[in-house]
Image (tube, rainbow, N blue to C red; front, side):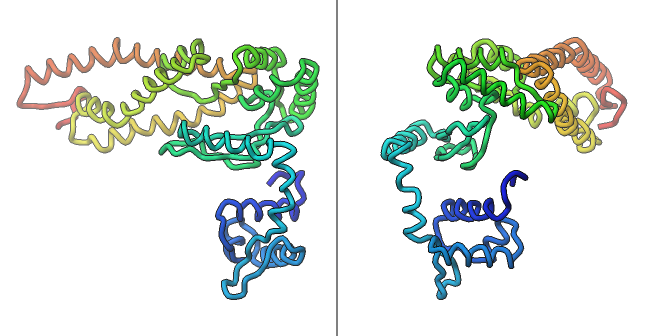
Length: 325
């Protein structure tokens, strides 16, 4: 919970959002365990909300339920903001027909805040909760919201964002944000590229990411490469080092994946220094291409020499570095 939110007020809405999520009666102990409140605090909180008439206590279930009063407190919002609920119907249609998570966001200060989320039906989906906030200036939803505003409003939003972020060592590149907003206005939708992927897929997406078909095709190419850690590493390790200690050797090689995660903060620093993820994406793409180059000029000759040595001395069956198989 953010420090600027009064604890009690924040907890009340966390309880209400949890009720919306589970859609059933909840006990004091459940609220305490799921939301991390002391048991006594959860009990007092639920009892207070029930006293106001927004919850009721069922003694037979020893649980709290929402009341019609809670439902009616926001019934006017649908008519005033969401066209009588038609917008949410469309949102549901999008999630159902595409299988992807559909999000309704509104502008809230310098943030785009998710107010309604409908999860998709696909096995892998974008899992985010209502209430989540993203910077207007540095998110796809933010660019879409700003695209509907005037240039003066965009400039004021950038100024307010920098005033709030610079004390913490962050800032917003005004030219970059204005370019993204203008791009959104021209093509009618915003597309944000904030996920670090691999190899040529990154470079191609950097140029062709605005094309949905190119995005789908190149994303597939990238994801086809994920399996090399499990399929190729073990085979190459056996060819290069022999199979006697293959478990230990493969374990050391696999540690490279975890070590690579330690460089994520460097990517964040690069983005903050340049104001764009493109620098990070192109850097990672260059490293991937360099690794491919080393595989050709260094690893390939090494394996070729090993095969030739093994063929000349089949009885020994030694790995490239003298490790017995």
